[in-house]
Image (tube, rainbow, N blue to C red):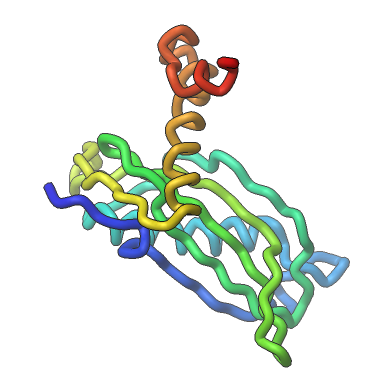
Length: 170
């Protein structure tokens, strides 16, 4: 099975925040943003795996900046690491200034997808080869997040979480 790069899975979605998508403060509903991120991330995971993908987890979401009515929103999703049948997808959300074109980071999220066949059974996915420094950082961090998740779920003994133990070594 061939390996793929994060850039091969890159998905960019650009959209406008309309009145029906906002809360009483005239900011984009969090749930609306989650749905938009899920769509972009699923396309990214499908580009990497070339299989049907299903959302397995929303591992992290940071709503750090409100996205006002009328904003141009850009969602960038890339696979940050591939495991056996699962893929971690890192999502960056940007607000684009309509006059200057400048972008400000508004939010980020980390989703996990599993590649499946037509019967819903997990399928192996290609390994991911990170290229840029940021991709390498996210690639390394993905394994720590996976081990932490497995430890918390009782599916891995803390003593076996080698990447987590390495964080605390002197």
